[in-house]
Length: 306
Image (cartoon, rainbow, N blue to C red; front, side):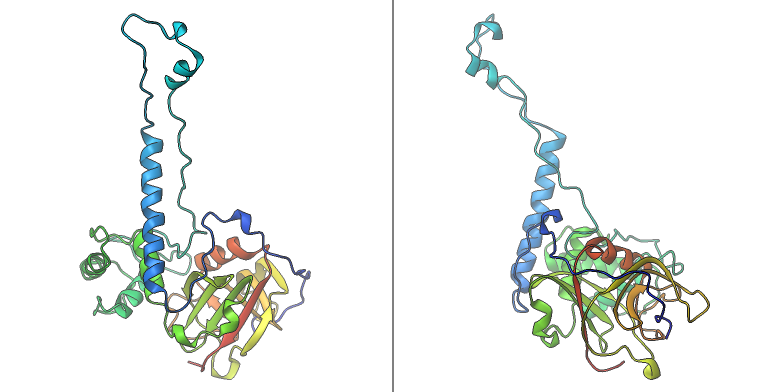
């Protein structure tokens, strides 16, 4: 298999350090979709409000009468004349819940190292029932119109750009076969679950959805094995020793030679298969790596082969 190799080091289990995450984890069941959207809306509104306050800090109102200097006022009155402290800003991070890069008209998936997530956007808009054209990997007028329809339906600003807020709604809405996700995936800690039939992985933290990505697994004669295992070895720039040094960036090995890793061959997750590993877009594998590379990550593989 492409993933089998001589391992360079072993990963010790570690308790996740939750202090590095911006938003607190919220326990979310499969039936709390509306609450998740409310949470995403509140967090987005809060980020906008904070940015406005930071950009234009409120100037304090002085209480002195004309002709009276601040030096003649008491300490308390002088304190009121100081500018208000700027509120902390929350810059967008790819570690945020359901994070994706902004996608707009004219962008396209031009190769394995230049994925703009247009195909993923088109698939998810199709599953959301607002896009009925082909999966082309190019963001044109039809894709823009579908984004506008989805944004209007969700009560978002409808201008046809898949921004961070739009993605957060869309990804959560289009996690498929939600009811088939094993209960084990919602246990404490970091857990990622791969549904072979849906070509999707879903990442949880303490039972709360964190993100989901489109992937592909092994071919029929090299199927990714079902089961639950903890990641035991990681290599950020791994190369296969079985298949001529094929690049496997951001590899996280969990079962024998099988790993989650970026693929140098995949542009459409519903086309072709791997040699047994779980192939991700390279940018997605990097995103997962940034969130979990120093955490204990449990991987569950389930579902019928597709």
